[in-house]
Image 1: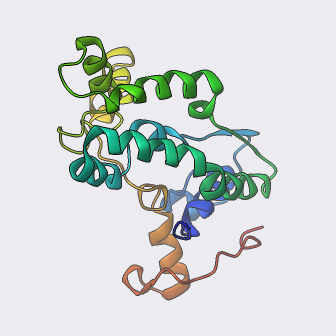
Image 2: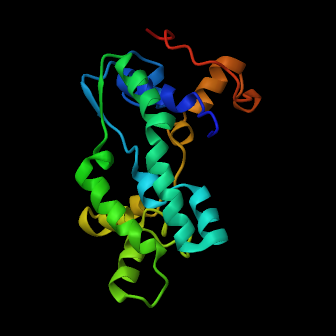
Length: 202
C-alpha cells in the first residue's frame, strides 16, 4: 500500500475554483471563478519521471528500474490521486479535465518509456527517445519531465517556466501555508494531521 496522500492538494482545487487560485491577496476579498472546467496536470509526473523519488529509483536501479516504477505509477494514479481531485472539484460544481491522461498522450509517452530499459548504445534512436522523455543525469528542473520542459522552452517560448523545479501542489499553490495559518496560527505549527473541512468557505 502507498502512503496516504496529504489533504492539502485536494484543498487547492476548491481554492482554484472558488477563489481563482490560492493567492493570499485574493483570499482577502470575495471572488468566484466563472470557469466551469479546470485543467489539471495530473499524470505528467507519473508518465515523465517528475517526482524526486524517480531520481532515487534511477540512481539505485538504472533506467530499467525507472521504467518499471513509471509503469506502477500509472497503474495506481486512479487510487492515489484522481478520485480525490475529482471529488474536490465536483464539490464546487466544476469539472476536471486531465490532458496528460488522454489516451493518445499516455500511449505516446509510454512508448517512450520503453526506451528507458534499453542499455546505452543499443540504438541511437532509443537513446535519443530516452533523453527526450527524461534525463535524470541532469539536475532537477532540467532532466525530469524533459520532453515537457523542451516543449515549454522551444514550442511555447517559456524558458523560465521550463527550468522551474517541481513543487507539490500544496506547496506551489501556498495552500499548505494558508491552511496552517488558519488552523494553527502559524505555518510552522502545522503537523500534517489536520482534517480538511469540505464545507469551509461554502
